[in-house]
Length: 266
Ligand SMILES: Nc1ncnc2c1ncn2[C@@H]1O[C@H](COP(=O)(O)OP(=O)(O)OP(=O)(O)O)[C@@H](O)[C@H]1O
Ligand SMILES: [Mg+2]
Image 1 (tube, rainbow, N blue to C red):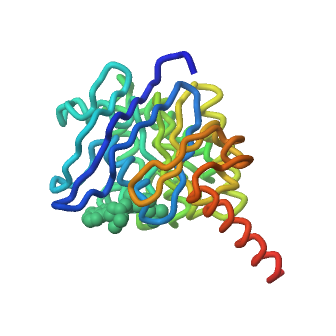
Image 2 (tube, rainbow, N blue to C red):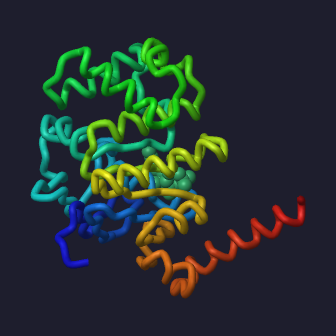
């Protein structure tokens, strides 16, 4: 691609005491692009996204460079990062329970998010929040705003988080397994919604998923991680047609085996 990337990760590595959790890795994300990130459990997908958001535990040592446009995120102050998170870059977390405070209603948290970043009245913020919840097919959004996170199912919370992530139209969304807690119908709705955000707002999306059929459907390019290393980067067509790395072949093969087992069982 010829345009300059919106997010550029260079030589990113993460160390915990004497253990290297992420080995130096490089990738870029361009405006309007969906970049898939795949790899077996424990390969480092979530740690990589936490590093981008500067949300790693203090004991973890990060080195390398993460640039969002002109801003070097590894050098950003806490205050700068608070402004960037939500407005420029949003995170759909793998575990939705971690994303909300248990002591405030969904409405409180949503309105706070909107009014931290946008100059608008409370009424306008509520309107924005209800529209964003309706966009992810949540019924009765006004009532939903009055509920606490524990009153919602995991799948509903995941969709609320997607509404939070998309309502400020950030430049970048990192979606860490955004559909795992959802049934097939809602999976499809969420994926359609992400595709819609990309198409209408030119948002760049880093899409992390175990599900290779989701990646095949959604991604333009794909990064494959294994044990903290990026072992392959390819367009989605190249990856599925001519996987180069043994590990990628292994991932694709295990998917076929799984499909086979499922068909046998049916
Ligand atoms: N807080 C932590 N302390 C110590 N090790 C950690 C911590 N968080 C992650 N790790 C280790 O870092 C590696 C990468 O973890 P990560 O959560 O990024 O994997 P993942 O690819 O997201 O896996 P999954 O697909 O299961 O979500 C794993 O080996 C994990 O054990
Ligand atoms: Mg993970």
